[in-house]
Image 1 (tube, helix red, strand yellow):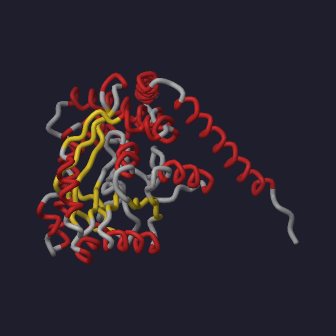
Image 2: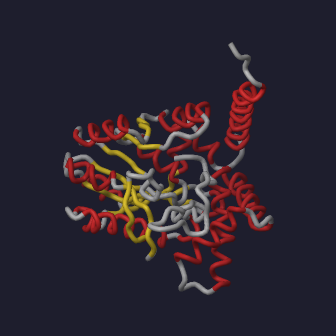
Length: 317
């Protein structure tokens, strides 16, 4: 019987050390005022800009690709602001993942379009809420789960220890997280048939065989077909949602929108194009708070646009 190698011992040790560091990070930022967290996040974004990091390169490439109507100076300014928002996404996580229920509810300073969610739930057909990587999507999911049964699809991270921390944080107010596999899809289907709410990140790139190309900001993006399939099987209602981060640590505002009519089309090409059009609508509502570092276009019909197939810069969703 062969002896364990030093490398096999090192992997669990590295994983444990990373988990300790993450827990310390969350505790430290949970204890700080939100405005301080956001100020420090802005500093991280500034550092990412000054160091010419991979995040800066990704955001620059994506903004140039998607927003050619902006001048080069406007694009660079948007990159700077978006990196600051990305930094705030990280430093606010302590309060969002560790906050008690009264704290989470106090962070939400307003809700716009809630009637769209209420009307969709009232149909009894099940509701699919599509919430892209815009603003504080983590908070939006937590807050919504406080008020209605909710099942959320997520992509398991590479670190199993981090997965447990993440699921415990997201499920602590009643949400049910299900992994992006066959069992998870079955759980989503059952939740919809019970007339409940499910949430999906619609701009997350699916695995090969789980998507199709559809235009996003005028360019082909490999798009999840699961939403279309669930809607066709169950007759569920779709809505769009985003969580706006307010300035100077004042809290957050939730926004809900009706889904584009084309999402209900039986033709999958029309439905997927409408889904991406709805996401684009939400992105344009607040360009700086979209996670432009997210590698949305790395898989292309023939060849990737300027990127290798590497992991994303943000915590897995």
